[in-house]
Image (cartoon, rainbow, N blue to C red):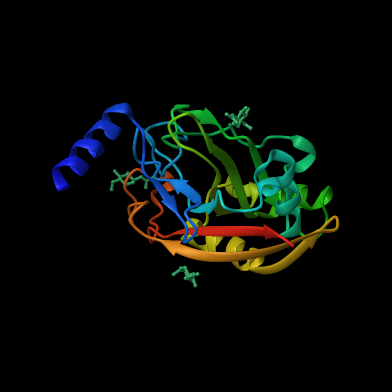
Length: 225
Ligand SMILES: *[C@@H]1O[C@H](CO)[C@@H](O)[C@H](O)[C@H]1NC(C)=O
Ligand SMILES: *[C@@H]1O[C@H](CO)[C@@H](O)[C@H](O)[C@H]1NC(C)=O
Ligand SMILES: *[C@@H]1O[C@H](CO)[C@@H](O)[C@H](O)[C@H]1NC(C)=O
């Protein structure tokens, strides 16, 4: 039996097919991005990257996982699209091990300081929390999960560097804002969190700005009520 399982596992890995991480009802939450050439660090250039430190589970309500859905959810938890759609940094790429290779971020959100339009411009000036989004939806791993690279930044005067401990702090602030019940544009969300270790290596190896992380990735499951 064991030999058969080993043979099956070898066959699966030869095909590049991954084992999904499933919930108690057998539904796919996400796939480990560290396989098929993927990484839990995105790519900012120069061989460095920023941690993908929050995952929105593939078991979330399907409409949360769409482009429009994640925008509404981001607004419910205090973020909005970049200041008048002006990108203040180059797009980053990530490889979620899903067979799509390195792809550009889908969208970038900034803390909105209580005002969708002007608030994100304020964030650009005074600094604050922000995140970039990718979707795990390739042929080798099609969970539909969203991966966020979250970091808290310095003001523009500091050239938008990440603050000390800004990856852990950014993640924890986003998670605190998301937990429990939130609402935007008449859509009500209920969000649960679970921490995952073993996906992202703790420390600062390969991490942009040499800022160390605790290696924790928080999985959020977002249900529309
Ligand atoms: C995956 O997501 C991207 C970005 O939203 C989209 O363009 C693409 O069609 C999706 N692929 C599948 C297989 O759903
Ligand atoms: C996840 O880890 C962070 C950092 O240690 C902690 O603050 C938070 O309470 C943890 N969340 C859960 C759901 O365990
Ligand atoms: C980051 O750490 C590496 C290895 O310790 C060091 O060589 C490099 O100068 C550091 N870079 C910065 C920007 O501090």
